[in-house]
Image (cartoon, rainbow, N blue to C red):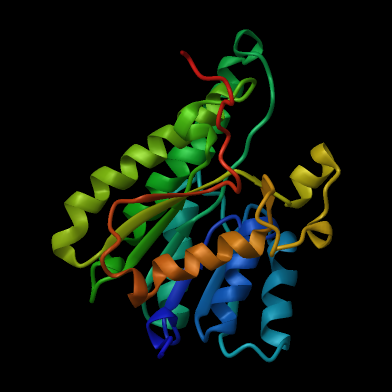
Length: 258
């Protein structure tokens, strides 16, 4: 059986928030498949090593590192301009940049709320809106990273959950609006993933996770990269406006009403 429909070789992709964790894994996966990828984060020094590692490896794709704060529209416009200047266009946009903190709702300051919503929601808007012209030129794919916190809520993470819920809704709406332009818009809602941040909170490292084990509730960044590549590829041509939940074993109450 041919698996060529899963390849995105030759595409150009922008992956935001790709200095570490899920974004870095996605960029590396894309480059391994022959994608020229733009990696970005708020500090050039954090994203340069990611591009250097890709370019110095035997991956078929090349990488360009760009400093970009996704909440700054001018910086986002510059990111899009740098991508088009270097690679000629944009085929895939992965809105991965995000941030969160844990606090009771009553302890969340207006500035704290605004910061989290700005990064997770407004950043997704800025990048998608700025890249629209190029995504529609020949058809493209937008993949938003949300969270299970945006699907069912999460204690101590109200601004993050609210912003991610909005990202899920935006995905559905934009998928409808852009379908006639040949652009597929989809979303991934991960559960716990063994990124450096989660490792510091939960004490579980990625190299301790057996990917073949079904009965688990924590995944790896590479497993989210698997789903991302599928959504970016022709294999997902009939998947439009969907949010794919990747959370391991679902949480189901064992108590039943009689």
